[in-house]
Amino acid sequence: MGLPLKARDVPGRVAAGTFILRSGLDKWKADRATAEGLHGLASNTYPFLAKLDPVTFTKVLAGAELALGAALVVPVVPTGLAGLGLSAFSGGLLGLYARTDGMRREGTVWPTQQGLPIAKDVWLLGIGLGFVVQGLGARRSRTAD
Image 1 (cartoon, rainbow, N blue to C red):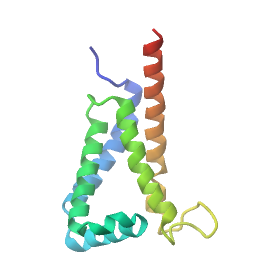
Image 2: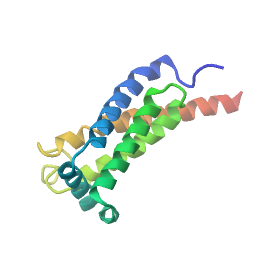
Image 3: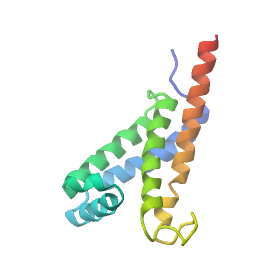
Image 4: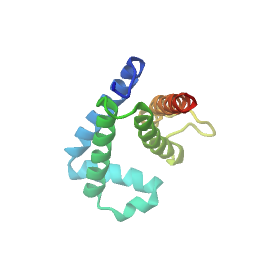
């Protein structure tokens, strides 16, 4: 039995996975001021997050990033499943981008300088959706046999 990924999956998985792992490590070590900034931005967009303590929120976010990054980098997680996690995560980031004032140029989807760091996460969504589609295609071909 081989690994649940193809050689063509490796570049996208490594690029996205290592980026997300590094982000999770940085957040894991975040100080209180950084945690409060992250929590404030997130809870303004997703009000249910306001109930969480900023440090707790940041640790949970860091843990999620570490888990997702590891799922992408470790070759035992099927690509379609890793892509599903990546798509959900990047969808949340893009929701933050779409709903936060000042992130987009007035009346457009194009980012301002402030929005550029989050808007660029659209590439994560593209990679994730590509992995999901690929996983569904592989599943369909296995059931057709």
